[in-house]
Image (cartoon, rainbow, N blue to C red):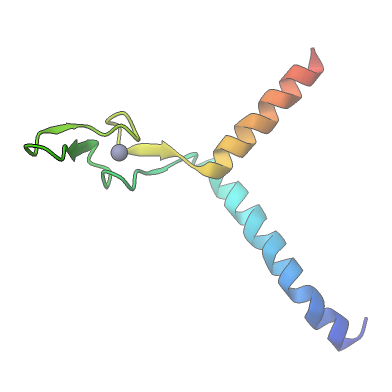
Length: 83
Ligand SMILES: [Zn+2]
C-alpha cells in the first residue's frame, strides 16, 4: 500500500473509529442529559411562566441516546428473528 492510498483510507478509518466509539458509549451509558430542560426535569410554559414536567424527558432530566435507540431496535429484530 503506497502512502497515497494510506492517506485516502484515513477518513474511512476515522469514521469507523468514531462510530464504534459512539456505540460503545451508548452501550455503556444509554442515557444522556436532556437538552430541553438542562437536566432539571422542569420547563416553563410560555404563558404565565408555570413550571411543569419536561415533555421530552417526562421530568427525569435524562433522555435515551440516539445510538441506544439503534441498539435497542437491532436487539428487538434479533429477538424477533429467533422465534
Ligand atoms: Zn427534559
